[in-house]
Image (cartoon, rainbow, N blue to C red; front, side):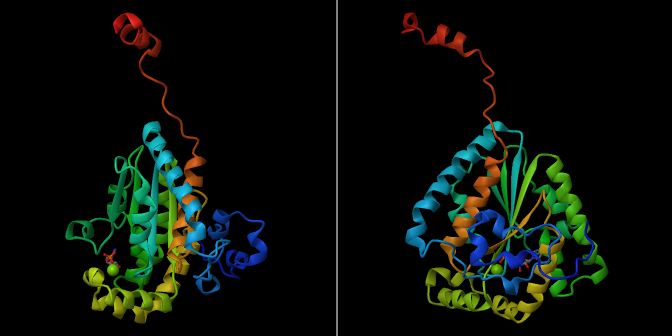
Length: 298
Ligand code: AMP
Ligand code: MG
């Protein structure tokens, strides 16, 4: 399931105009199981068929409205749940996706779990403990802002643990996600792909906007030195842990509106594929109509 897969990048070859016409948008960003991701082959400034935000606005609104309706249906149906994992380099847009796309959902039935440096209690458990603790209940949508993948990313780049330890985690992650999927959890994982130039531009924009100053930290700049190591760690995680039941998507993220549109569409399509239904009424509606709403009662 998790062997190293050598050879050429299979999936990234699809990233061309020619294929655009024949593949649907969601498919083209999905990391095919068994393929090898090479991030430098993916254009972070890709924006599909819309020239700009204004042109995409109507479509984005359509998908966010669908998203809200489908999430309410998921909640009412109560048999399944949805887990969305967001991973990105700093400024990659995790907060933006949560705010714009997933903010369209009804807060009743939605939750965000933020994965920070593990607390003493979290660190005292196995690395998947906190992910399992925060996994969605039936009917619920949970967004992981960062996720259990930090345990094969930051810990690897900063050599916080031995290679022998993180190497075996890919298989454990796949097993964990299989376990959730077998229990009715739909899983979507998004890597928001920006260029390092775009990150620097976003850092600079923060400097120029007093309302964003609180977000600035020296360590964010220091992390830029590790960009290539992070990209390699991401490539391994995306390649080894994209499965049929828990696919990874690489979403071009330089254009925020395109990123939001692509994610909204993929989430909508996943929910639509779940064949959600309102539960049958528990009460005898004919009886209730007769008893409480007939002309004689008024
Ligand atoms: P932020 O999401 O920007 O608030 O930052 C959270 C920080 O916690 C990031 O620097 C992550 O890399 C870090 N972090 C998350 N999970 C882990 C982990 N398992 N081990 C070490 N650091 C982590
Ligand atoms: Mg940060």
